[in-house]
Length: 551
Image (cartoon, rainbow, N blue to C red; front, side, top):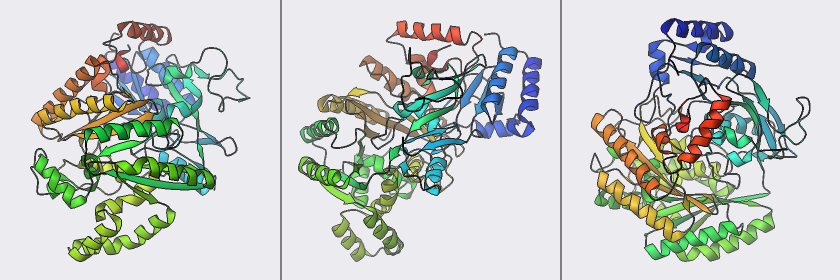
């Protein structure tokens, strides 16, 4: 692709400004610097940020981009923290779709919504509650202001039985790289038929082309929602010590329970350190400032009582069903650790007690702390987290889990209006997909655990079930952006993690832009096919050229 000269770039910006209005085209260097901040090293500042409000405007901008040979990098809400929001070249324009925030339809009987990409988890949840619609969203531990469609199109996952977000998309409207608008399903524009209720339509299935790709810009879609269950419990599980045989047996038991439909196929088994990142920050603790030692972890575990591993999960359904499943869960999981059951009443009690408990903690009342530990088997910070975790499992988004990203920062983390990228926090996610076999998962986890120790990064990991048959050992590299040497170490380490996963034959469930050039290292024939599709749909290389190494 020949990069446009300065005059052509300027003329493109002028044309887009005429279309959208000056307010929705950002070109000042100061604003671009702030808006392009990223949690992943090596961010690129684009030529401009543009904010269309409709499918028609997206289409017109894409047509102009073809005319002036300008690459467009579309984002739904621009909060893809830990994976990267940056384009690959400075001559690109970043398109943010947050103004396209209409909830077009909600069908309570058929349990779906039709929404635009600017609809956030927070907004959709509020709409359902305000209109007393008995449907739940599935949300993530990510930002409440993150896009529902953006996460689904990037194949993000949640925590309920609707956790596979891309599989719950049904019926897309897409602006193709030439500006043409298509709607999947094969129905006339005036009739939806089963556009939003049957994924496959007629003929070849093409919706999959628009997930983790650069073949078009999705401007609205149907998404299936979870009917509000008659009965909902959350249960928490803690394994105090990691013993290899028991741990492998636990993983295999959870797989069998998921295959049998006893638990949702979305269990997130979280390490003690991972929970600690939500509860505290390094600079507040008496620990090594650069890297937590084993002794540091032992002291922190004693202080917070996080255990070696734990998870929460929801149990949903008719009362009789939930009661029966609860008995099976107790029988199957009790040999491995401690179970705690939580319902709305217990959460209400915790919320009422919390101000008194926090005052007691501040006063360092050892008697109250001892009684609390005996009654709830948990520290005050862990109990404080309970209502937030409970809400996530009923589809209510929260900023609470976002605090984890600030664990290594040397300043107080915000309690609300959290924007990890603008705060210049350093975090990179890494998540290879592994067959859900306990021994295999443990062996892969142990390999990467040793690599984290070797490179002196804390081992942030969640063993994330993304289906009953597949596990993602979801890992995070937390680093200090302001420390150039630490930033370079993190970058080199991330590359090493990718190489190790590919050497073992494992792809990631999502890729940071830093790993795009490695995606098809083991399958160049697949890259060739994807580039042939790109050449037909996007001969001018307009939509995100280079994403997933597809140009």
